[in-house]
Picture 1 (cartoon, helix red, strand yellow):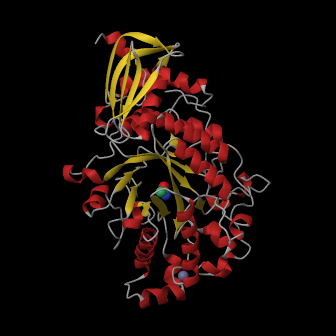
Picture 2: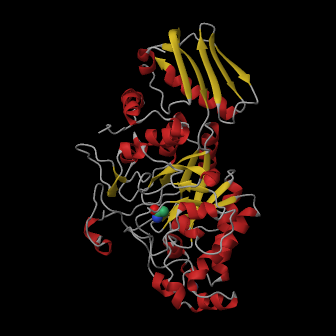
Picture 3: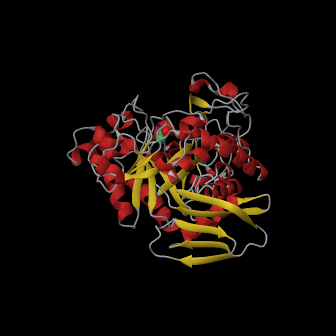
Length: 486
Ligand code: ACM
Ligand code: ZN
């Protein structure tokens, strides 16, 4: 193929196999025909553009949808180039996580995220709905979760990143309260349907047993020491909170199960995320109820409580037809191998005082894993571009670094099947609004999409950058607040 034809291609993510030839169709009048062929992998497709028109062949509606996304990108200056494309994804889990708790983005912004994910053939939206700083999902029969847990007394002013002890955050706070911000059942159903129309499965996350402070502010009776919660609301500062769900209290567990039961009914997807990260055990150590639980269940000490609740919730979800997913700490201890892990900690340092569980260890125990290491996938980390006006949390993740991500790195060949894929995590402590969110997500999510879709067949960063220059214009034409490449 002449090199000029290859260079003309600005597809992102790059398909597994592309052959261009001389000639093109008028985009406006091109006829598109569809065919089904069961031998084509699910989500895969064949796309032919020649003088007879456009032909899309697939085995599933998702494959057809992805072919249409590619077709959109083939349209340039009113023409569609002649091409033969065969394509299928490397990984089945191609995701993005949105933290709607630290800052709230709302329905229209989420739909926008969904639109852009779909254009890049991403298929999992992990929705971080509950945390210490806010509870964002209305639960029938639990009105205080929206009246109290969905509103915090104040929030850091736009653009602030106080390099101070977060306990002394008061000089940096706005005067007014933040919220109430939450999604109703109708909102959630609308977002689910919208995502489904674009072949995206929503994975709701209900954090437990840590990162639960917003709920405890409304229902202090479910904390180990209710008196500590007196007059408290969701936290205004970020960090790791010691007041967590009391696992010795049967009513607290019942509360959790009622929430999860509702979540299982509301969300049609196959996976529910139950958090599990950064859960200190100090309150459990001193709590009479928790100590009693440890004794009754024949546990060694309070460190066995988290695996105990994880086992119980994994089973609870399985009884409702769902698989449990959680941050990698939740796999520590005796946890069934049906539990999926989300590997987030870097190899260079353990997080939150927990032993670091290497991804290769997790897969060797039989867990499926979604890879989202903070070294490559945390898009709230600095992207290191010139004159960047947005504020970041610590750490650097350039576009090139994202492109170099290998979700299966270090995994023995026979266990690679357990690596489902990966996702970017868009934590929002310092991501204040949709402009900020888009700037941090794009173009880095384009690089991630190519890692997850094209996998090892991707052509290399220089070629990606060349295509990305054009693709960025495509995004900007849709008014995406896409950051520059460097
Ligand atoms: C995490 O970043 N705490 C999962
Ligand atoms: Zn307790």
